[in-house]
Image (cartoon, rainbow over all chains, first blue to last red; front, top):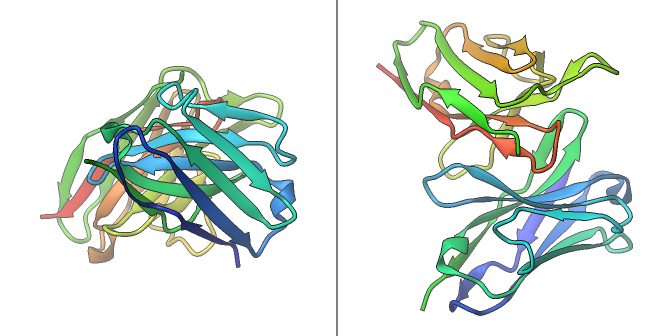
Length: 116
Length: 113
């Protein structure tokens, strides 16, 4: 069974930093593109970032480019999202997703709240 | 970026009746080399992550009831719930995974009349 478990969310002040982590199991982690998707509470889904299987290629949404960094540790089966210069509008549930030929598998999400 | 537009934003349907959701992409998501549309449909219930229902526009995910039917090609797609059940109350999203950034429709909320 594919399992994606996010952690690291919480309350952070504007301008602060936070690192999200996603522990993957039930599949060969190093073989898949991995993505982060956010959802502002009560709103829709927004793609944030992706990373290729060996970590050499990354892409970002314009809204986070230069502030967020996606990375992975294939030895530990973990995906990360380093979030710097956080803004109030970054407040959202962040989902770790695995992309397959048939779409996304999703974790349960972790809530990030940016507020003073 | 490929813009995904769903209609309607919300839908109220009687139990046992048909619910139809439309999704339009601003450019084609059809990949001619494998004859597939890179379009998925997700269902999201409150407090839960999205759940994959349909991929390649019309292929039902394992375990998804056959009342969920995906159709369409190119830029115009439809999700039909042929006989709405109480447990189908949710928000439904389409997503294209043909290009990066991956983009989602704004969601369609389905409720019972």
